[in-house]
Image (tube, rainbow, N blue to C red):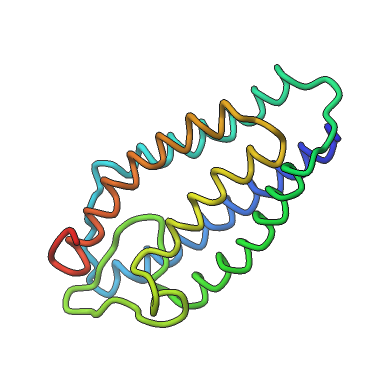
Length: 172
């Protein structure tokens, strides 16, 4: 199971690295089209949070488990995580070149209202919340689950407020 843990975490880290390259490419296009960045001050904390999340996963796994055995709750976590990846892909498809890890808004553009964005203003953040719960849950890493769920919640409160101001002119 140790090998599976490292393969799983490596997959998720690789997924995040690919997303950063996609984000950088989209950022270039957005800026070329006049995009203005909002919430720049807190962006570094997201990078720090997500980096420390993976370090915490690995550290807690190495400290707590010599011989890890799966339970029902671990399988549930994995199944939910895998399912959520399809929603993650739909986010990229819905936003296209507008998808970014930063808050970049082209003046006078309208918020995207297709895919999951028809039903919720911030479905991507819901997906991230679920991932930050299900990844540690998949390996019974409860300290990481609790600590980073709380930190992510606090940071998302700031982020969503900034994004709402940028997109809708208010914090609702």
